[in-house]
Image 1 (cartoon, rainbow, N blue to C red):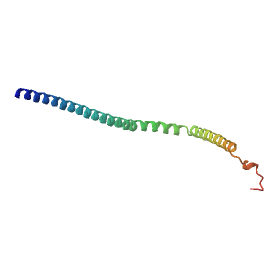
Image 2: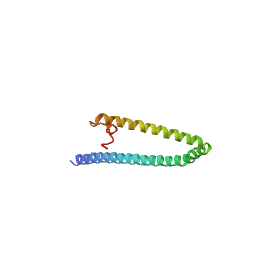
Image 3: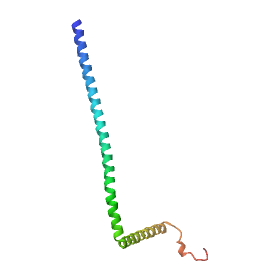
Image 4: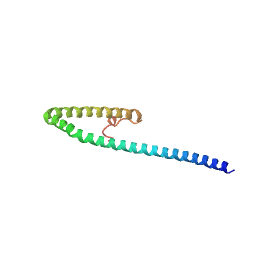
Length: 117
């Protein structure tokens, strides 16, 4: 009886130690994974900040040089962009008005005589 109890106790301790090792191993792997993920996130943030800090002055300097080198070209490009935006706006307004005219049961205001206004 004592031998059987000793064997059962030894087996139980062995199972418990395996479970604890498994839990400890899993916990350690999970902790290491979290540490690696956090370290990677920190490196990415550092890299992005470093790239921004290193890249921005050159890009801004090049942009400023191109702007100062040929201001007439910049003005022409801006005027072209403004006219393109205005034409897009006019088309959108025209389309909106056409849709409103199709949906409205009332005649447009332009067709009403001036005396009624």
